Image (tube, rainbow, N blue to C red):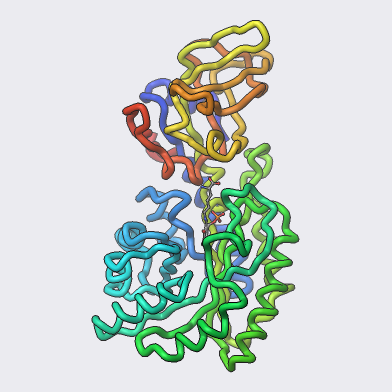
Length: 384
Ligand code: LLP
């Protein structure tokens, strides 16, 4: 929750910057872990959502595993205290250098997305005299009903291996000596708020497990990815997502083999609500039809609205006046540099401090230096 005392502190810091509410992060993470623990489920935090050292240290200490998509993320995770034995490594284009780093660290699984990738991991593992534990990333052909850029489980996507390739894939893995299949991996998309999608995924996973049983394959692990969505409209009322119902769905609908361990890869639902982009108003420009609030933060600091038309609630922390509707825009020379259109915000003037909420996931990590701007810094509630 952001308040006026914080606003006073924010005024003394060079804007724009990311602000993280550490208490909320810890509460969210604790809730997720407690709900998952009820069923013995393991959560791997998806570093791609936010890979700040401080956030990672908090999460590794709380017992999360990690989900990484590059060797740099793996190295960062290990630096911040994650046990390599609990690191899953996904991605359609793992390079030899990256695979070698992961082999040296002896991670939990390589989540493999194609036959050529499996052959390559086998070759590199053999060179090191090692055996790599792998998961097949399965494309379950489930529609996540989410933005087209963040849906991943449909057949026309570049991700994963489809049902028609199972038999060939299993044959290939059986012929190789340096890979060991231990897990099936699924991920259907991100910002999923329709819980039925996860029910459909469970049913699909059950069917696919049966196909693998017909190959006489029973695996010790299943990984159902991440994707649990958050409430961007009401960040305070719903600051922590309903992890209880989420894990219940899997407990009710998924048939695990005896002793089989279920893994999750959650990113957004763990870190989104604890972060805000704090920005100062440079000008208020009144047009004939509408008024523009021009901020010192831009699409290079938070690209989600420009890239996905994503909604982020915006609050004026320094005005108590009645609300007015504004287009809230950044300073960058592109029309897409717009955080919100026709957004109701307390009447705003030059110098006011705005908070762009729910920006803890896929915010700072996607920032760039476009227009030769500086990368935004990060500040934490327990340090300012
Ligand atoms: N596992 C895999 C294999 C993934 O591809 C992703 C996200 C996750 C887990 C974590 O998903 P989450 O729990 O955070 O939804 N930049 C976009 C989101 C891209 C998501 C990519 N994959 C955004 O700003 O909405």
